[in-house]
Length: 153
Image (tube, rainbow, N blue to C red; front, top):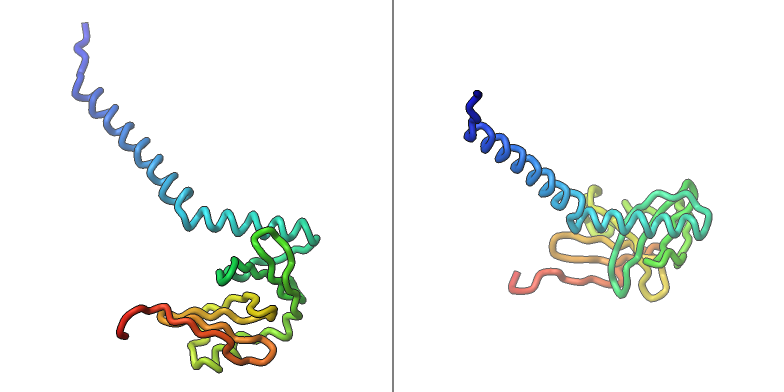
């Protein structure tokens, strides 16, 4: 009669349990993290916009001011829409020049530029570590500057 090696069985069960625990952790950490859930939400809203207006667009940016604004582009136009997929603004892409807005603010050309609607007009939404700027697309003037830092900096 063979002797059962309980230490080997216990070690095997422990290793299998550890692997299952790591798989569950990875699932919730990577796939259900707030960042990934936001990506899923953006994809859902962009798909809603595409189906509503029969457009094939590439998502550009998301910016929150008085409400959340989403921007997407196709070959010819920039579209700004809300979280219900409702079109708020359409602008010819040739009218958009992020470099001019960044040059106005004397910022690095690698700075991310988003888009929003402010006072009924399309604006560049430019965020730095300390300040958020809204720059009117047509007039290239700063329409709103918000300090993000609270304190004596």
